[in-house]
Image 1 (cartoon, rainbow, N blue to C red):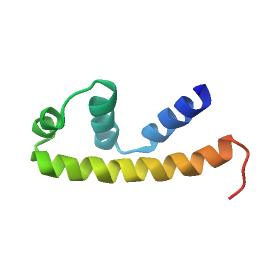
Image 2 (cartoon, helix red, strand yellow; image 1 turned 135 degrees about the vertical axis):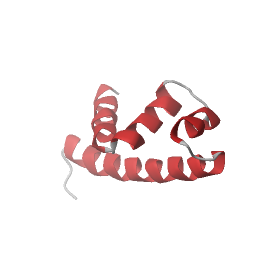
Image 3 (cartoon, rainbow, N blue to C red; image 1 turned 45 degrees about the vertical axis):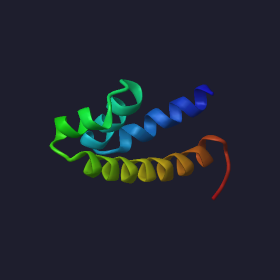
Length: 74
């Protein structure tokens, strides 16, 4: 599990500053979509869309990175 958490943290660090902060606020600090949307000047639906795009990007990064961490080739 510690390898997975380390990998996730490294992938979050690869995101843009705003993207990483949005993920941290929503998933580590448990702020609501509405609170984060207000902070960054988005509507709630706009933030939901942005969150979904960030999660897709993070998923891609994590899947690629985990192959290397686990010693698998692509």
